Length: 479
Figure (spheres, one colour):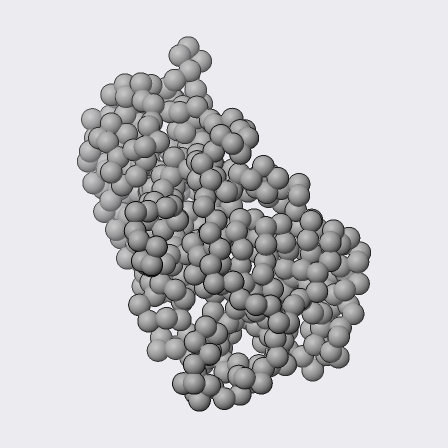
């Protein structure tokens, strides 16, 4: 049920449905009790609920909006500090709840302030201003969008109906401030320029099958070429034609992607640098439009100029932005039953305790040419689907484990054993061969992954991936 409903008499402004957003809703979620943050924090949060939601639900103007924002910012700062004390998996859920709930309160506070000023009904956003340089008139939209996105990205928005509240508020804000772009043909959208560079020659190709049935795929999974190793990689073509992202070429269009991200105002986490094992690699959160403008769209730079590389990598974009999720579907191959990990599998000890997934894990991989996923393994079976552009993929079986020089613990004590010390691109030099002499004897298979291709990567297989053009891929982890 929606958090906001349109007022029937003018269809332009919003009212808060207080049956859906009671003042105590932020404090009554069993299983993630925010009171664990302490009595003072609970009291301050409850006060913000009363100051913001109380006047709204009673149709009265609030004279404390500015003070509320200051208090919200103080609580957000407190929660943010706690979020960064420990690794994310060790952060107590009450602090994640606090960040989420205060983000919702702050967004309501800002929206209500502009309702009172009569600005919401008269605002029509100009997509050209949807960036960090928003005009004063619509900058507050970016503030609301980005605060709610930070709650999703930073915390996962835990708690009953928090994600639904966030999604509904974002949807209605976009719906009421600019008309939705209808489904258009590709000729009405600007397209990415998919220039393919540095395409390697394929010496050891992966087998390809067109429109493979699920039953045939399941047979493939259980017909191991090497005893004890399990299934081999496979490319399945012509099986994604029903995806709107492919059949209508929507994801080739910056205009379409901007529309789905509130004119590019939605935030995304990106990796900066060529690879996560390179020196100088980093992470930051920026708006979708800034990502397109700075890293993917054509520029006036000379052809031989190579700007900083950035990658939207392994991010659950479709959970964050459900409208993009509607453009794809989980391949039926992900519901096939894979064989069990056998005791003599080279990685059996690491894989045997892997938890069972109820549904496949979806991740987006979107970036310019030259983005790289270094040689590594994953703990799940993977179906990697290519939607836009091309990628080069090289795979090594688990039997090559010792020849790939796995890393150990890093300086922070994090186990990097699933990532190789090998830089595949640099191994053509003599220095690389001297440092890792066994690597030259490691056998591999490889492919150019094209639009509409599905690459099945068996659990435990090492793989190196490089974008040859602007590329948008979706991975489906399953077991």
